[in-house]
Image 1 (cartoon, rainbow, N blue to C red):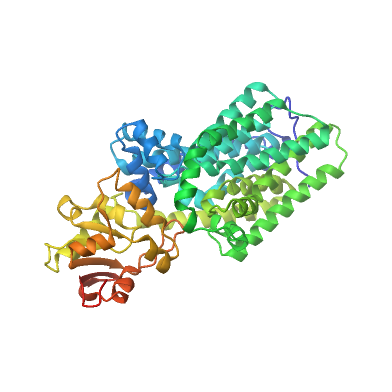
Image 2 (image 1 turned 135 degrees about the vertical axis):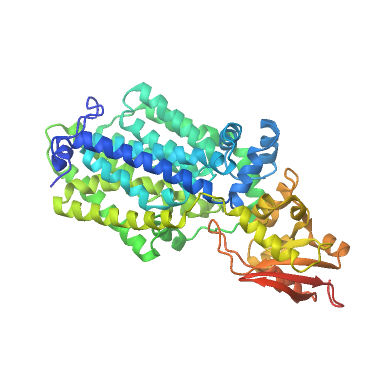
Length: 535
């Protein structure tokens, strides 16, 4: 069974007959209804998740930036490397925060909107080639990935970036028209203004256009100008990116490696590394098979097959982005983590649009059943674990406050051992307890014990623009011979950054006494005292 194609210049949004045949004459109508159901579900589910999930470290950084007194203050903070998202992202968050009162929902609404946009754009892209039935199946694929589970309800730019890229791909399918090429350029420029690593998404589009030139000797000026628009914001914001690299680059926590690049495929689908590589290999082989089939077959309209062939090159480019990112960041001595390469999810999803029509109906039905079972099992667990939609961050802060107060030493400051936990704890704590909280920075020792000082360095900047108490350890120790230390050696890592509870080890090594005063699960409150050998 071979993939169906439609005319690139005149088909518009007309689906192929092949896609209609899978479900019958009403396939298109049913597919659109199915898409509407997916969108409604994604919105409702994401709103519940947003309301019930506390901010974590990165999202607190977003909150701080969005609540700066002016746009100029945001720019000044970025010039001092306060955070790593693009300037346009904070302007969006600042606007939404002024409208929606619930802060957890407000800051996450752009990501929720972004995910819905991704789903719609995937449907439109795939439907143009193989019809609504397969397009609906492909629209379900992102629901199995971290794009839905994590980034659709995270107050960071990633979901919005992928939405802009997905919209740009829809425009790319129609880019022979100048109006669509202009919209494509605007989408890519916005993506780049939201996050600096969005520039990698331009690579697959560029490869597809090179394929078009080699195949048909055609240069589409509009597309190349659109790609140039996508790069332009990077040139404007280059001083901000350079400052980030200069300030954090020496000990960035996520160094590029081939293993990390390969492991991304599993991370996106929440699979083990070897399974993720296997999924990626199947997708690549399926797309290659489609491309070779199109190249070998003699189709009445060469323009039709050629256009689809270029799209296969586009998809392969997205699937290979982790290794492109590895090469570039290795040369540039930059950092690389899986969320920077999230456009790969688009590649995997669109690859299914190439593979599904080549399968038999039974195989497609089994695949759909498998996907629905996996999504249903996970979503069932989600709904059974969310009752009332109450934010858990405040209750966590209250529990830690009760633990600290139970030891009685309310005259002493409470140093928080984990820098990733500190901003959220301050954010949700009651004022009387918030004033006692402090994070101790010592970048040199952070590198020695944790191999990175990025959290210490960022908190040093954030204390200048937010009401958080961050103190250099030597100065703090000189003023406080005794203090309380809150430690949680069982806390899970966040955002891929390893959590090493190194302060108790470091203090003991330096000769300080640590007396355990209270414990609840993995949480500990120590009384720290300067011993004779402390320095």
